[in-house]
Length: 222
Image (cartoon, rainbow, N blue to C red):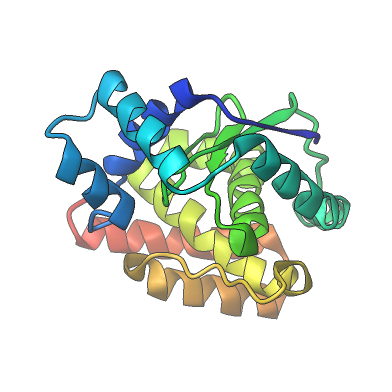
């Protein structure tokens, strides 16, 4: 699964729009707060103006950043794919993935066209890449069925909680970084970690997560 690392200032608005309205984040991020300290409305023109000011103010040279990110991922990518393929039982054989760099401190993705955004924090960028690819593995194995049969809320809870396994399976590749997840998924992430330790099966683990998420969603009126 080759990753093409790219930057396009016109893509920033897409990530801003998705991230500002994320269902997982309860509070605005520092970058979002900074944006709205300068602009009253998010639109393509304001997003571009914000980015055009931010990049030189912070001394960012995007071509150099892309090269650094690419080199970091090359160190761990093959190992990540090899393990993930075995765990899910399928090779990730879809179209090449595009990773768009963004100045935003939160990153969105699209499971259907296999592209996602990565921030500029080099010490944790590989964790972000693995986090987003883990979403794709989940979606293309059983996640799309869960989405269709159980709805987006349950699908999202499992998708985001399942990344706790990065801290178990890929701890050597994370090199000190940690996938922390969201507070609202703390209990489900704990269940997933325990179930995987017990069964060593991603699909039995997902089944347990689905039972818990379905029960929780029903009790909350979702």
